[in-house]
Length: 204
Image 1 (cartoon, rainbow, N blue to C red):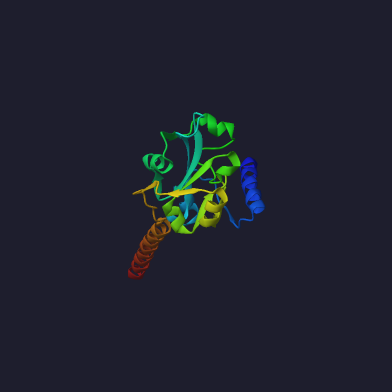
Image 2 (cartoon, rainbow, N blue to C red):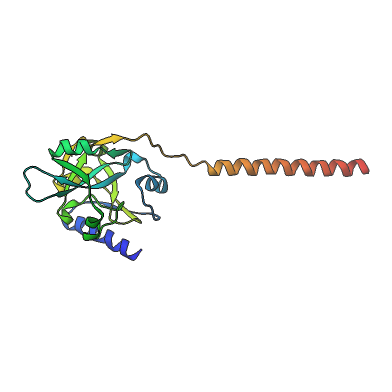
């Protein structure tokens, strides 16, 4: 947990140094944007998730460069659209060794690619959201900031690279179910008491 807080602190220090306003969002440990939305009680369209990809560009001699692709949690990254947006020869998921090399955890990559010399590609849907909750390289802390500030800070490319998910948040109905159950128990108890009272009255 201390390591995760240190990772988030690295991001917050970077943003403070760059003069970017943000709000720290602490929460219980979560590993997906879906779980984060459920935990903090917000919509999927208010959370931005990231995907680290390896890209082969025709004008770049080295084997691959890396981009962080940012989409809303209600979307998933379409690699074909990423390929088209970057005019790339090839686009694939970043290998595990890259995460280890940069001390990153899959599922906790922040959208601040400049910290690791990564490019940043932001989906148009995220830009429309104006504000978004983003990762901070931690499973227990996230950040809320203006999308405009993120795009400007990272000099991000903005393009349509996401595809809408059919996944929807489940409504929490446990409380109402418990209330119904406890209500039934009360009625049953009252009926039993009423029967006992009636029985005693008859005996008298």
